[in-house]
Amino acid sequence: MVLSDTYCSEEAHWIPVGSVSAIMIYTAIDNFYLTEEQLQNSPSRKDGIDEDTETSIRRYGCDLVQESGILLRLPQAVMATGQVLFHRFYCKKSFAKFNVKKVAAGSVWLASKLEESPRRARQVIMVFHRMECRRENLPIEFLDINSKKYAELKVELSRTERHILKEMGFVCHVEHPHKFISNYLVTLDTPPELRQEAWNLANDSLRTTLCVRFRSEVVACGVVYAAARRFQVPLPENPPWWKAFDADKSGIDEVCRVLAHLYSLPKAQYISVCKEGDFSFSKRAMDLQSQTAAKDAPQASSPANNDASSKATPSLISVETGGSKGTLVIKAALDKVKDSKKGDDESKNEDDATREVAIGRSKSEHRTTDGSSDRSKERDRDRERERETRMKAGDRDNRGRDSDRERDREESERARDKSKDRGRHRSKDRGKDSGGYSDKSRHPSSRERDYHSSSSYSSRDKDRHRHHSYGR
Image (cartoon, rainbow, N blue to C red; front, side, top):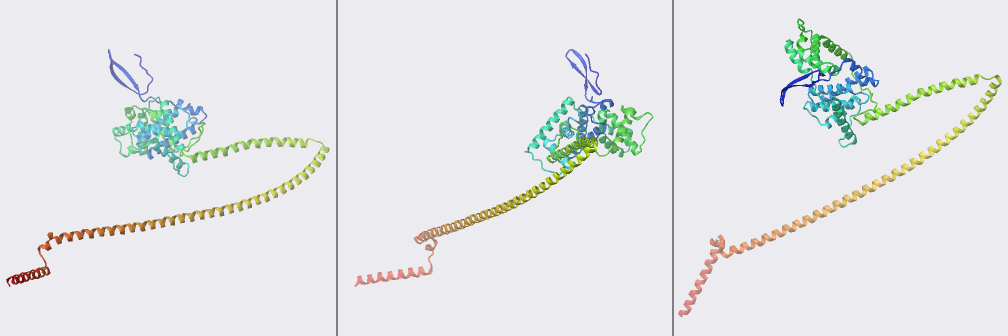
């Protein structure tokens, strides 16, 4: 079985397959490392971009990745992975063909998925849009999700992510030096304040090409050495401490040199080098870029015109100086005639100018009168509309009042009907009570008693009178 020997960092696994008892399989994971010569011959250099410009654009893209990760509240691992992917992509592609802003946004979006802290495309686009407005001192405008600009940005973001995956061969494993720093410092028994300084230096090293030149162990050793030198903490040299961590002294010195050069550079600014047209997350930035391009075009054409005029003047001078005296006299006469003609032309031009001015004034006055008449008509129309609206509102109020009155009348009639019904029910109840079903009939009052007693007395007297009459 033939195994590939072109790898830098690999893991070995023994797996039994069929009749073969064991097969050694090498899995290349972290194999994206370039030499200094390969970086000097990068695609950007082939397209005419010098080293300083490429370094500045790389730092600008890493700043975008770091700042966007902070605004998106992503962990540091996501921002570190995004910067490594950014550097790897531009080791295979040129800044002249892919805009740095698009690639930075695509790197952040892809890194958030790789580190299991995904963010939506809408969030990434909004953050980069806001960052662009702040960096270029533009008023922060609202980016509508339903607009055409947002749809275009979303398509560009997904397309850039596919480009990155294609160039990486879908192998996006990244090993950071941060996980080695803590172990190294604990092993070397260093003070605790050295850990934060080494961590900061590791974050800053991601703005350079160290992540594509050296393994993470070498970068971690260089960061620890730089932090120890800054805090003046001695490290063991007999035996050398870096040999215990699989690093060499030349790599550590190169890491320290690159970091020192990074801190001597000014803040990175955006440089437009993309040949396929500039890219922007906001409309106003695009308008400003188009205006600057339009201004640069006349400036570029003006030197050519100056050269043509300078070439034409010597020929005229040579013609004038090359004749005899007679020709000079003739030329003088011709010049006088020309001057007279010029005077006439100038007078005519002045008359024409005065006429045009008068015509323009009359037109402007006519326009002003027309404008004033139109304004008065519009005012009258507005007044009529207001009157109509007021009349309608008055009619609505009157209708409302009439309806309220009708409702009050209906309610009063309903109340009267209810009162009549209640009176009828009460009269019926009184009739029942008089029929002997109430308590009053069982317990008569004093007046009723007197009445009944008087009536009973009179009936007795009548009976007595009748018996007396029958006896006679």
